[in-house]
Length: 525
Image (cartoon, rainbow, N blue to C red; front, side, top):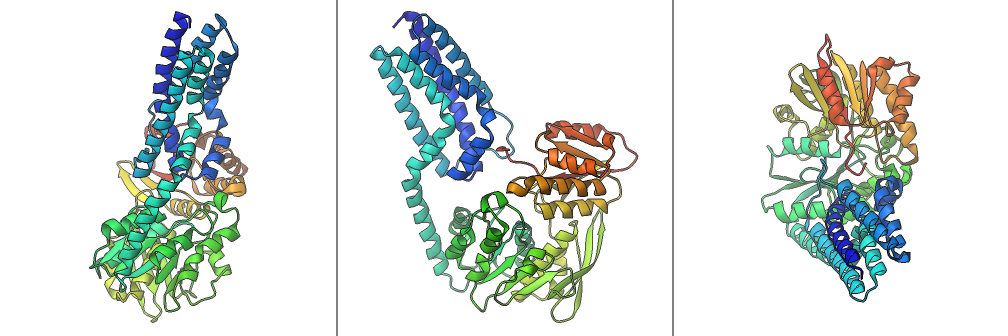
C-alpha cells in the first residue's frame, strides 16, 4: 500500500474506534429507552432517519473507497476520515434527562458489541495485510455507519443468556413469595395514576402494618422481581405492586409472578395507544388484573373514569370517585395554593374530613382510592386523616415547588390526555399569572395529532400565557390554541426548555407567576 494511504488508514481507524465508542453509548441509551424491543426501536429508527445523516455519508464514502484507485482513493479516505470524526462530534456527551443505566444487561450487551467491533477491525487489518486496501477502508467505514444497529444485533446474540438469567431471578422471586402464603398482594394498574395511588396507599398503610412497595416506577417483570429479591422480608404483611403495560398480555405476565389477591384499576385511557394498537386492547390488558384475582379478592375501580364505567368487569367490585353512586364518594373539594381539603362518604354512611398538601381533583380521586384500599385492609377511616396529611407529591406529578415569586407545578412525568386536562383545570383555579410550559404528548398512535390539538384548545381556556417546547412537535397544540383566538403575543415557542424557563423567570408581571410544567419528553424524542 502507498505510505500515505497507510497513514490515512491508521488515522481513519483511530477516529473510527473513538466514534464507535461514542455512537454505541448513544444508541444503547436509545435502545434502553425503547425497552430493548426490536419493534419499538426499529420504529424509532424509521421516524428518526434524519438524525443519522452523517452516518449515511460514511456509508456512501465506504463504498466509494471500494471502487476507487490511487490517487482518488486518497481523497476518498480523507473524506471518510472527516465524516467519521463528524459522527464522533455528533454523538459527543450531551445533557441527558434520563442517562443510560448500566444494568447487568447493558454491560453484557456492551461486551458483546465490543466483541463484534474487535472482529470487524481485525478483519479490516487482515484486509490491509493482504493489500486489499479498498476492502479495509470499507470495513472500517461500515463499522461506524452501522453502529445504530449493533445494539440490536448484540441483543439478539445475548437473547439465550438474557432468558436464562431472567428465568433464574424470576423463579427465585416466585419461590420467596410461595414461602409467604399470608402475604396479601394488591396489584395496582391503570393508564395513569397508578404510581400516585401506590405511594399514597403506602404512606397510609405503613403506619398500620408492615408493607412492601415497588419503588419509583418499578412496574415491569424484572423491576418487580428485583423488589421481591432485594426487599421482601418475613415481617411484611402487604405487598403493593404497581403493574405497567405497553402490550397485550403484560399484566397477565405480572399477575403470574405475584398472584395478587386484590387489585386497583385507576383509569383506562389512550396512554401507550401506539403500542397497544387500539383502546379495546388497552381495556383487555388492564382487566387482565381483574381476571387474575380470586373470587374473595377486592377490586377497586375509579368511577370518575368513563371508560371503566362503560366497560365494567364481570365480577364484584368496589367503586370510588366523586359521584354519589360510588362506594367511596369524595366531595366538597376546596383547592388553594397550600393544598386541597375534601370529604369522603364511606360505605357505612359516615362522612370523614381530609386535607392534603396536594393539588387537583385527580389527586383527590387518587387519595380516595388509597383510603378505600386501606379501609379494605382493616384500617379505620377515622385513623387515616393524619396520614393523608403526610402524603407528599410523587416527583414530577403535580409537585409544587416554590421559588420566590414563582410557583412551579411540576407535572412533567409521562403526560396523558386526562392528566393534562386535570392539570390545566387545577391551574385555572389558581390566582396569579397562569403559565403552561409543554412539549405535548406522545405515544398516542394515530390519535396523537387530534388529542394534542384538543389539549391546545383547552389550554387556551385555562392559561394566561402558553410556552411550547419544540416547533415541529407542538404544531397540533399551536393549531388548537390559535383556533380559540388566544392572544398571539401570549404564545411563545422555544426549541430548548432551559431557554424557555430563563425567559419566563426574567419576564415582568404584576401577578405571582404560576408555571405548570406539563410533560417532559425522554431523550429518544
